[in-house]
Length: 534
Image (cartoon, rainbow, N blue to C red; front, side):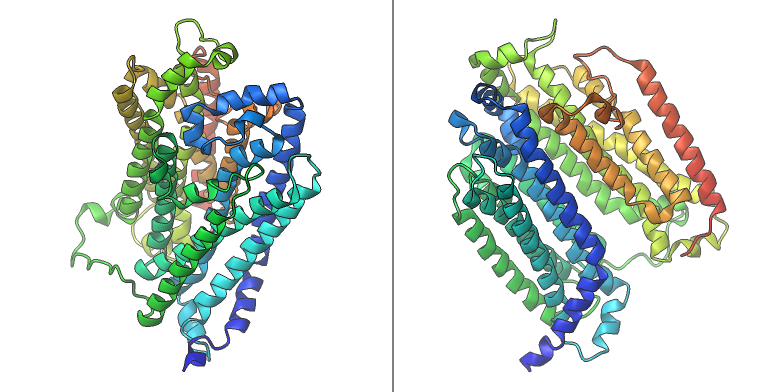
């Protein structure tokens, strides 16, 4: 009986591996390459102990703690300690996203598109697909861990020894394994791929928020988050292995539950059943705009809550930030207040660039939903009726633009509200609002590129995520790693005036807005002319 449950798992595993060999290789190469570039960059930027200690002082402030995790080894801030402290969390998040997308693709997406039903018509066990998916994902994460671990050691940087490098890789691998197990569980609970990916990403975001707030105010709160666990490894300083073992044990327990639920549920069903729809659609739902909103209603609400919490988590540390600045002479020397502006307002500009990039993710998801519907072969069903293509794309475009503004606005509300509650002299709402909204043209340009890709090159829509990742890299790490300025200028987020510290540059914003309009118009023209294949 047991053999029937997982029969031919090996063949199915090899098939899954063959299907995604290019995608897996791309993820591994990209994550490894970025890691290998950053480590030597630290040695060039901070060659002396004095320079490293100066940077260590900036890492003690609550905003940086919330962003990258609690500092460790700050009394002797070696290159290894810098690498583990500043890079490990964001690299682990990238690995988590890789695992979430992979597992969702080979579980719920395959099930929705009927491929699992076809596979099960063959002599394949009920658990063969989920076991095969898990094995490939586990293998990918283990290989990534080994490559990154031994790769970092091969750089021969003095403070990055073999044990620390292996632990660095192990943290990445075990994070991927944890989110592999978690996504496998959500694939059983949810009844569709959107729910699976949404729940998994929401858990990842919640884990980040809990860790951020906990790292600043409560160790116990941080220990509720798996991201809080892995940061307690203190790589290259104390090299604790218990968080890796704890995360691995939790992963196996979650995976066991996922396997059990998979074995007892009906194909196509989920343990959170879909609600039956209305017998007749409302007048609003019968148009492309209403349909687009209905399809993405849950995602919009989830992202709105997430962005509000993101803003609140950063705003909640502003009170401690003021105290930290007052007590820290080195910070005051490194960041002398601009005339009329506090040091906290200078940090606000740095936070806003990162927040604006995060806030661009939901509007991009909204506009790319149009391409997703085409791939699901549901668009042609609309276009065979009296629905112009411009109206169809325009509806998703309008949702994307409005969603982008709402996400940025809610982040401002969360940040300003939490900051005002903890600061003696809070930053005004108008200042916070202006610092955020100045990034709207950059967001429009990213949406414009997405429209262009959908209209001209639909197979290349994934490029927009690479460009957004590039923007995050040069904007967030550019200042830290002293990248050339022209690299930042290649991103629409790198040329935005940093309000309120810098003066408003209307010309650069007008240029970005004009480029956005041109990209959007060309994208609409292309969408009206090209073949719709589904």
